[in-house]
Image (cartoon, rainbow over all chains, first blue to last red; front, side, top):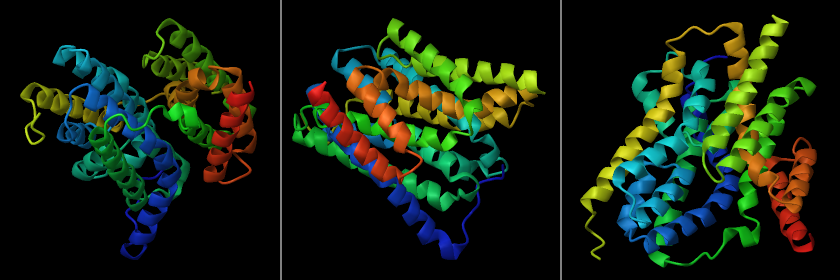
Length: 235
Length: 101
């Protein structure tokens, strides 16, 4: 796999626009959750400015829900920070899979680009494969960033505006997006063993610690272990 | 509460959480660039994206029969229609299925 290319100057607007367009269905699902997070944050005593700073600096949805929930219940700051870190540890694994694409990229540019790496940016970048450019990356990343920042601040301003996104099936948006991206990774029945191992481990761990982030790490490790064992058997 | 003032303790939490989150994002490529991987580790890394996606969706996708059916539906159409269409149809399907199941 080659390094992410810098688009030729002429193609930058096209690449950025393509990234923005690909981010739109994800944004449509994320905005109601941003509004919901904002209204929860208002209840937890955060001002719109607090919410904007959190979305702008942390920019990691699930971990922000955890942070707002804990902060609202008066948890110590250190516990809030540790929980955010725990929820976001999966980024290490995601980033590792993109390592060849960042090989030799100047640290400043890599550091800036990776700031925008959410689950969705990562998954769309994988899907783009060899055609991945920084224009596309920032097109996706900035669209989601501006949308998430606006939605969470608007939600804090509006207070209890969005009652329950799940009532509109919007919680399923993320499942559907991830399923589509998963389908893109399908290379035949050989794909199945690590996926089944991951599903089994994730379900088991989720049953033990419901709602926690551990099931993601458990699934990733189980799937990786099965693939490593099979890789060894083949080579 | 004054909207132009940020609580110092909260600001410290936000900045610390943001810095650590950024480190989780840059840490993957940084670590991989500094270690040599054998064939088994490479196979594990190649399988990681799919495994992470499966782990992300599995608990919610199988949380109730309606969502499991909608998941199956999206899997069947995902490779046949554009992503935006598959997502829209999947959300529509889950709304209907949750009503009837």
